[in-house]
Length: 431
Image 1: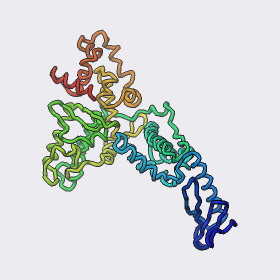
Image 2: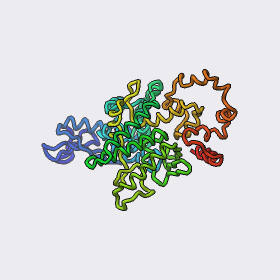
Image 3: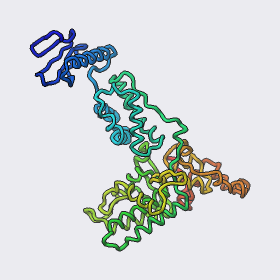
């Protein structure tokens, strides 16, 4: 045993001291490095083990001081709060916060010192994340960007020497398209959704189910015909709808929180007007009326619908499918993919660039994740002599970069005047 400094204190080696309140208590140690006094519990009553822990901490502190790093350890919990405080107000804050809370916090919160997180711990996390549920490689890559940026932040703060490696999935594993609905499947889905709410019409016992199913039907028609993201749909207020222009303006939409314009066909306009009339008749909020600053997809209490996931799952079962032909599971996001595929297969010669504008994404994302078209979808180009028989106006739509953005979406917005066509062009380009 080392030299006693006082009755309850032992100097195990020069400058490192252990102290025990009584024989049943754990040993505490303290020392000074670079003018900073460090005190901590060894969490053990064994003197030799406590001495080893104290000396190990001392050597680690000396090395940190030599490199100019913080001497006290920083927990993962502290890293989370500091990182989120640093990115507060950035476009990425919402996604990063949700991803951390949903997936990373529970796994890494056990680390009281982020500098102790090694590469093999990251590998363990990836296994843990995959076991939580079905996750596509590209989704995991996107989430791991958050983890990678957190560790880079900790590295800049000198809370760790070198950030652990967060591996990226191989590109060949990430080009996996989410399932979509064919035209026939989408029509069947909408028909079944309508039949399900009509079955409860007038049923006073199942009025809640009737209301929920009606709103779900409108939601499916809307997503499948606009390409709107699920998260974006939660931002839409009644004041954002311009029926005359056949458009919806979303402020703060998309993954970059930018302006988004959605264009509406007759099916969507009819469904939205039906929803407004439905809510006007049934609304049970404080004013008993629908106001323009209310979310479009609200309950009859005037509160935003938190999630359509459960109702959509029940609808998939009722419609007789929840996976596509390749066994991939359908989700609400499948409706966005359905919108993209229908435009690519619709014979309107829409370019990838124009489709990317309409969907608020990049051409690269369209090519990698949204195109479900196949070679047989373009059979008519050859069989019918498409290139030779196309009219002068058709060729202008395909080649001329002026009117193309507006003309290429006639299938969405219907026939429009020359003045509205120019306005529509400007709206598309701005997105």
